[in-house]
Amino acid sequence: MKIRLKNHNVIEVRTYRKEDFIHIHKLNAEEEWNNLVEKKERTKNAWYNSDLAYVAEHHGEIIAYIRGLTDQSITLFVCELLVKRRFRGMGIGDALLQYVHGLYPETRIEMLTNTSSHTYYEQKGYRPFYGFRKTFQEN
Image (cartoon, rainbow, N blue to C red; front, side):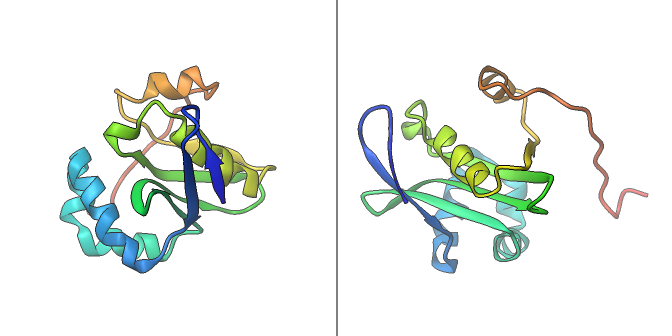
């Protein structure tokens, strides 16, 4: 699917392919998402097993991605959404969110954010919610 951005550039949003992972891994490293970088094989497996796995390309370069899970009826959980720094502010994140939500319009989008991105989502009309997290090893 082609999407025209605010600056009139056109990006291609397409389904993730296994050969994309090297570029996703690089984007994660640039963003210093160290947990995903350090657990490279587990991160790759997460992409393989995700319901939603899309990348955005501009002139053949992967500049953004979105990965998530859905039950297709109630919840669409966005695990990661990342836009390469130099492409931020052009509407790519919005386009990816709208695209995946359009696939399952009856669902609600849920996601975890960090302290630097929560204001972005609040400005887009998302509301905060309270949750919990625990790994198996944390008994």
